[in-house]
Length: 286
Ligand SMILES: [Zn+2]
Image: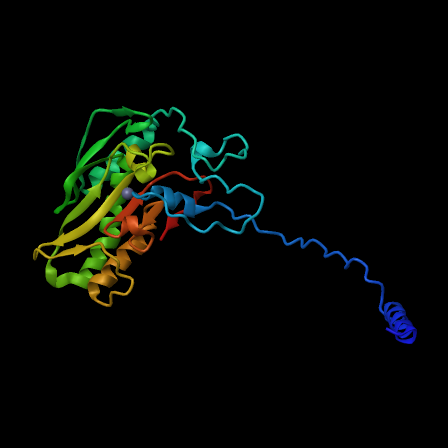
């Protein structure tokens, strides 16, 4: 290479480096301070835990550093701040069975009799680990002429809401949708009191069924013999579909939790109703 060419190369290099702005570090991107809204009470978790199947891996809500809020349930409210292992289910602390309030219980029994339910007061159930009912009822008839099949064991409050829902919501819907089938004669239940944890898991929180707070409805039978089974009916354009959707929606007026076939696979064939007490009084219905 001739000296001349070399020289011009050097000058080009010098020129270009002078012409270009010094390549400094790029201006630092300001950290984006998006405020991630912290979901308030997170009913999804409640519902997930209430299923009879292992929990689905639900997509986590907007990721942030905060732990997911604890399920809105009375017994976790005062839990110590979650540590790094907070996602690991901790064994349920030893629980006692919640005693019935004497006055409320007496009023409930009177209302249940007045509405026409047939039931028997039975012996306190204590199956350990918080499973049990202080003052259980065995319910055989929800309303006059409407049998609960098989008979169900539950708290008075559960039985009363079941009777009210049947009277004020199910019967009118049945009359509008299925009058030719005759009167409703049977509510077929799939589960009332049962000592188990949510999800049927080995650790975790106990199901509302284990407190006498829950009832699962599998189908309705009419005098004609026709039964309307609970099944996925969001797209069902028949009157049976309209009937199921109506009684599901109205369930939320009486129960704190309503889970139907649209909520998850665990409820493909029944409605789960419970009278769980939640702080803030919110209801979870879907
Ligand atoms: Zn249930």
